[in-house]
Structures are given as C-alpha cells and as structure tokens.
Length: 324
Image (cartoon, rainbow, N blue to C red; front, side):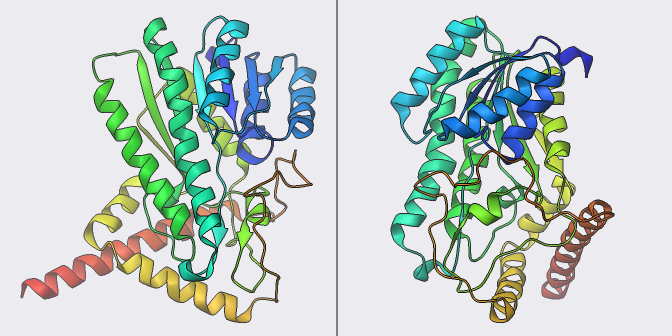
C-alpha cells in the first residue's frame, strides 16, 4: 500500500471502531488526516495515536447531522490539506427492537445520522472534487445495505438508502473519470458499535461468532485510495447477497426475524436505552469491541457465505416449483 503515502484524507465517524482503525491505517502510510466525530476527547486520543505513527492530524469535532457543520468541516479540511484525495463517510449508529416498540425519535435519529449525515458529507465534498476534477468518496454501508435486518428497521432503511444514493451519484458523475463513489459492505465487525447501539429488545445484545477485525475493513478502505472500485464486500461475496435479495427479498428477512425472536427470548434481561444516538458514549475512542476470539474470522466468512448460498438456493428451488 505504498501508493497511499502522502494521501490527504477526511474521516467522519473517526472516534472509534472502523473509523479509528482506518485513521491509524492511513497514518501508517504517511497520510495527512482530518478526523471528525462528535467527541473531541475521543478524537484527540485517536489523533495522538496517528501522530505517534508520524502522521499530521487535524481534529474537527463535527455532528454530521448538521449540514452547516459538515460544510465547515469540508472548508477547513480543504484549507488545511490543500486538496482532498479521499473522504471516508463512516458515521453509523443503530437501534435494535421491534419497529413499533422503538421510540420514533430513535428511528428518526438513525436515519438522520446514517443517511442524511452521509448525504451532508457528499454535498460538502463533491463540489471540491469537481473543482479538483478528482477525488474518492467512500461510503461505509455494511451488509445491511444488501440484506434487510428485522429488529433494526431504521438501520435497514438508512443502509438501503445509502446504496441508492451511491448509485445515483455514480450516474451523475459518470462523465468525471477521476471522481469515484465507492461503497464498502462488511459483515459484522468487532467494534464498540453494538454495545453503543440503542436497545429496546428487553435483552442483552451480542454479535454472531467470527466477527471481523475492524483493521481488515480499514485496509480495504486504504486500498480504495489508490484502486477505487464501486463495490467492496468484506466477509462475504456481495454478488451472493445481491442474488439472494433479488431472488427472494422476503425470505432472508423472515429467517432473520425468527432468529432474533429466539435469541432475545433467551437473552439476559437488559434495560431499554437509546445508547449513543443522541450523545457520544462514555467509552468512546476504542477500535475493538472485544467480541472477537481466536480462529473465528474464517468461521464468520464461511457462515456468511453459507447463509447467502442457502437463501439463494432456497429461492431458486421455490422459483422452479412455481414454474411447474
């Protein structure tokens, strides 16, 4: 990844998880980095780590749901960096629970951060890219943009919306060969996000075995700085997931709903909370969520691929039966 040396990068949602890991990965390549998130203290901790690797870092506390604040972030980044090579739109929050049992304000906040926040990012940086006639916008989406997630309806809506936003922007920018809109679709990642999420299920949340190391996602984002591509799936093939969604859009959601219902019936009790939806968490500033165990990464990929294959296979069988 030597080609990433000297890149000028903006990362939103940089205070923990994938954003923090990506900041450190770019720092190791000698990039100049602007870090943005709501929590200044957490950003400073990540920034010091990056500076320790020799990177120049500018901290700009920003709530991406505020379009004016994101416009100011873009202006400060351009002034400090001179040019912007890559903007990583990475903010992502969530709330878990049956749709009608989650406060509407929580649903709204997820949409504001995950969809409107990314729209604000794109709206602020694309004029800069057009002026430069180059630049890469990386949209962190997740597998939730390809397969629906019952018990996380607003999250699903935001991620499906992000996929549509990217496709529309690629169409508008198709005449600009050096401006790229890149989507990243990881499966479950070992970050503090699940612990920080809102929870109205009545039970403690967790993650499936074999979650991804956030650093593997960070490496994929760093590669996009030199080798941009429309779609990057991490942990399972995007084609299999797209095929499953195309052939049987409701089957995967039905299976997931059954799984979630069984899981939370047996989970340890937990109080209702809005998590980090409206304020940064107290333990912000960490890369890892602490869910990973040795030897699980391959299991995660195999499980995700297997699930997609089962869904796609079931869809094909169902279609053949209907065609008889």
